[in-house]
Length: 560
Image (cartoon, rainbow, N blue to C red):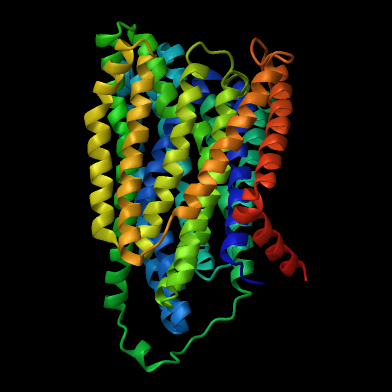
């Protein structure tokens, strides 16, 4: 099994993540039609609880494993590298067992809390569109039992998902990006198959209760994790392991030291996750009240808009953000290796290359999705008055979030933790402070009030990004001149693409269609937009410089 270089690893990881995200968004269309609104309430509530407890069981450790494995592998400390994996693995396994036990034990309490929360707090119903339309189904003790049952079923996946997270972190640290990324596709495909086939058989063939059908669907997470685990174990066994220390320095590295280092590397990841989530919390606590009190929106309309901003729109944004996550998988171990080896010039090159790739791919994707907001929204969620209007702007949040995430990873790779914390807190402060004032300002100048919230969020991300980039420039004396030059070409080519698509819309309208025709329209415009964008960036040599030449040469060498 061959290792992947930075660019090829980023490409493979990004491609696989986009596939998994698209599958994750698409399957809900047939799935929700099978289980209906009541089933979607049970599934959504239960899966959100499962996701929360899963995050608690891993707490950023997979990326910490990736970074430390890469660090010690670069130093030639193969024995220490193996110990890092075993030590962090024990922590993750223990935390997964404890989390699973707590989830099973407190499932009825959590289910009751969910029902009471949605039943008595109207604003909280914004957490799911179906909870607004079908709020009346939330009454009844039977629903608490159904949700508790499904939560307990979901708990079975935590242990296996934790195991595959460990192995993925190890393989990524060793720069075997392809194996780690393909395992995610294997996991998602298996999960979607179990969800769709299982729910259909339960509801249409065996006529089971709704709780059983949703429980079988949730159990798909366990089945898919086991499938991915088999694949990953096979790949990991192909790596030659060293069982004894080869360097005198390794003998002096204690488990206590390694454990402290694991914690030190994990904390920034947790802080970044908390701050990132806090941006949405600000929305939850301010948007609905501002819409109702300042612009006189009804509570129902305000709740719908809130749901689009924090939930429905975010699910589509992850398709763009998959670019950032894919690059992170390759960037963290690769950049860590160069930092450890004190290869400053390579560090500078990879930082600029990371920024260029993110901007080159995410900006045109956001522009295209914004232009096609109505047909895209119709495909995934059906007809909506507010959905396309909000999504037209909210999709650009994904671009800022993608850069934000990767810049923070770069700061971690350079061990600039203190400055990273400052940048995160300052960005969060400005987002919090400007959220309501921007909404009031947009309302007064005649723009949709909810755009003020989205602009404040993007500004918060931008401030964190700028502070971090300035610190990186000061630390390693990097120049961003070429990146800004390519950004200018990217924006110019995106503007050209927008003009062509706008002209095409006079001949092929993009509005007023149902789901089937919206798919056709989206495909046509996506093909035309891609041809215009990639063609124009090729003529300006942006494609060759940012992605094409190096990537094609890497793939060609790989085939040889």
